[in-house]
Length: 84
Image (cartoon, rainbow, N blue to C red; front, side, top):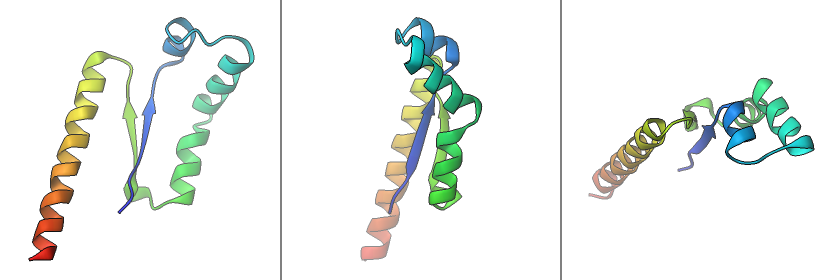
């Protein structure tokens, strides 16, 4: 079972906090504006296993962790049920 997680951050974060500038910043902004990575993932894989997770704030990140832990627990339970 595969799951693709796409963590997205705002353009401001890329510039100010990651220190991206010049060509690197331009490439990242272009990809985000056109949703290139998300669209490619949805085209290459089943849309039910591609998840877009905003990661702009600490609250976003904590929420993402809770979601991922929940998905792992559901997978483990489903797997245990299938094995018995």
